[in-house]
Image 1 (cartoon, helix red, strand yellow):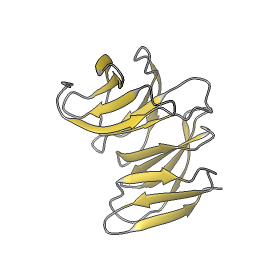
Image 2: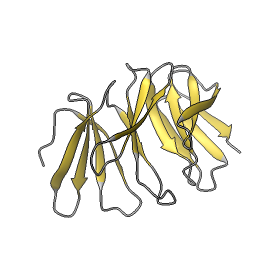
Image 3: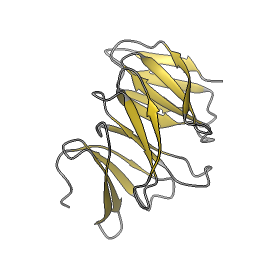
Image 4: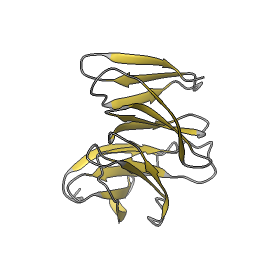
Length: 160
């Protein structure tokens, strides 16, 4: 199925009825319907689109966080209409992201470490050192443990 140039990262919502693409070449969030294989919308993202995370079903409103390593920001968008809900300043550029299962935090891997964002205020609440060149973040279903992959290593973090 054709999409904007250079789709780079993808994620689904918990229901599995939407697929979200970070399209690097176009700096866009693209929303797909996986059943009909149609593009439902493409929305511009300031600062690059190479990583993304979708809020969990526990959050009343679905949001998608999108960022890239060449940007110092993460854009938080409403995927229904592309409206920007927040812009979060993250030093070091976003290389990977994941929401906590309860939706209260967004974890952003950057060249400066793992940035924790409070989703109630969309403000950075802390930064944790991780192994060099982080690329991806995963969070355990109970939200207490996080894993950040990097250059030949995995940082295991206590998120509680």
